[in-house]
Amino acid sequence: MVVLIDPPNAAGHGRLWSHLASDDSYEELHDFARGLGFSLRGFDRDHYDVPAEWYDDVVAAGALPVSSRELVARLIASGLRRRRGQ
Image 1 (cartoon, rainbow, N blue to C red):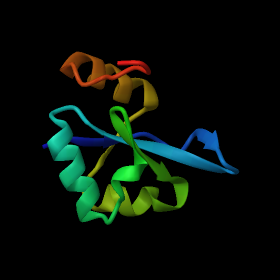
Image 2 (cartoon, rainbow, N blue to C red):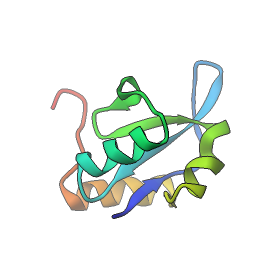
Image 3 (tube, rainbow, N blue to C red):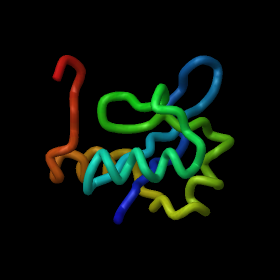
Image 4 (cartoon, helix red, strand yellow):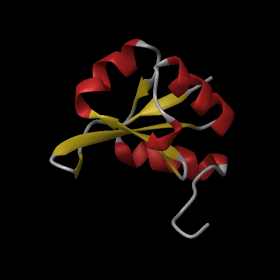
C-alpha cells in the first residue's frame, strides 16, 4: 500500500492544498481517506484535495510525502492518472 501526498503548494479558495493519491488503486485511496474522515466530495478525478493544515496529520497516518512532480509521475506510471474530460 502506497498512498502519496505532495506538499501544500496549490492555491485555491484563499488557502494552500496538497494532493493525496494512490499509485496502486482508487479503492486503496478511498479507504485511506475514509479512515481520516475525508468526504468523497474532496475527490477530484484521481486525487483528494487536502488543506495545508491537515498535511502533518495525513503524513502521520501513513501517507508518503513526495514532490508534486513525483506524485504525477507515479500516477501516470500506474495508469491511474485521469485528466479532465476522461
